[in-house]
Length: 345
Image (cartoon, rainbow, N blue to C red; front, side, top):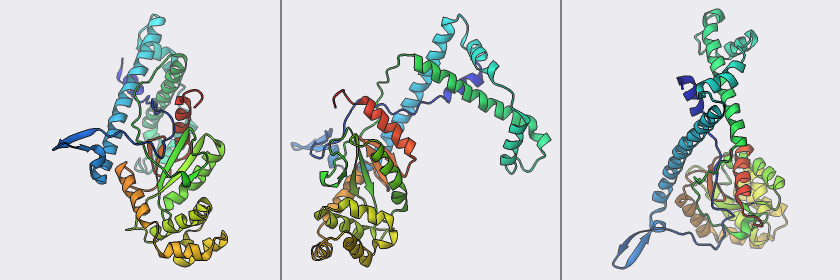
């Protein structure tokens, strides 16, 4: 198989994260932690390691999975092409030439000029005619790679493929009192976030759209992770949200905090409570006593343990997702988790 075709097949990486473990994490289901050592009869498990050490292991497992998944997808695509070529009694090279390369048209002049307009600075302002052949070759190669992707995707749709390689999953507990939606939903998104974090605020419309689209099937659990060193108002805001939760208004208060980042100072926190008609004395007393500070710090420690090094961090049925990602990224994992759920779950 020539270099172009090998490179094309190497680019065919399916991004599906197929999981064998199904279902939302339970707040009271203990995680199974491997025993790492025994000292005078006392066991040391992975859960006993410092949170930072546990968090550092997470990206290593993610990287191991990505390398395996990429290699697996490459092999699957290669086998599909080889099998299709064998059915037709031709070589894989000939198959791709007949089914793909011969059908890819040469880039039109207008396409080349459009690419040139975008890349002119990278091309050191060279005249169009001087770089036309280079642009033509690059664009033709890109079109062929896209065509190969589409062709092999069609082969995948017709084939019976079982992916047994599972994406790494982490059992993350949550507080049923801070769940938006069905606490027993098939897909639970556990969010570690900071009320002063602009990226957490950016993720809110996406989360609301997902919950509305999958009502009863997907739920959101919130856990605190105030980054106090860079967000000095985040801890008080987290305490205020918990105090509002005492009066049954956690999510309403959560929405107010993200809707108005200027309301995170003390006066703003009190004003938000008034907007929700909370008992002012109870709310102010709760806030002054720092009643939930210890629980908030425990949330942060738990987040570090499972690899949430920044905010927002999400665990979708235990599958880690970092940052304010596009809705399509969430949707892909959600659909895979719904498909993986046993019937009746």
